[in-house]
Image (cartoon, rainbow, N blue to C red):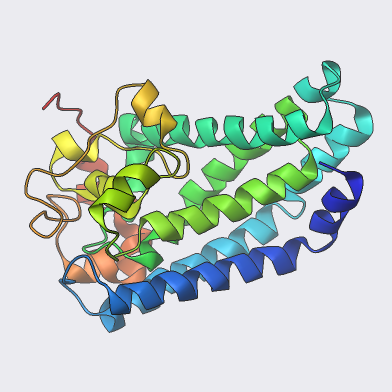
Length: 283
């Protein structure tokens, strides 16, 4: 990308992140109110305060633990000529697009990993234990999983020698698409079938939040759907349909644990959380 464009993105990083978050949040929340896909099992008042509180907690944790985060590491790598794109002298536009695609692949592989490794699944099941899926679910993750994810993105970004502007753009896109594809709003079937060739749609990702393992262990993509197609983890629709499927984790149905802030933070360390292990059915 041109230096002026990249410098503008870096200079206004915080404003861009906040604007992207509030714009997409407001848009998706409005669509959920106007054209809902499913009737929620719980009201917003019982879910949104805790879901949004954990988002705020995660933001604070990242700012405290990673004061320079992935963007700062990318700036240091650029100054020192470190990383793949610097070593091969890739044109700026190739480095920019390559960073977006390869970081998206990283998120896909990380998502499969947290479903496979029992210790990581204890953290990730906080995301899956939401009894409904909507715009707030897209950022509902345990703080320790957020830290784990940031470590991976920092390492991959440094190894790539990723442009700082591409790191920021990817983060904004990832947050935006996460809110979008967790949205509880209806997209006409014909439009959805076309859209999911380019982006993960709400109907595509909702399958992943089914209590049925044969559905939950599919559709791992957050932004680009191509990795699910390529690696054979794509599933088109839930067995019971989007209005009939059950959302959440089969053995974690208590509203106070699933949708209370204290319950979410404690979930990975409780007896049930320690006992629960991910399973991969072939169904």
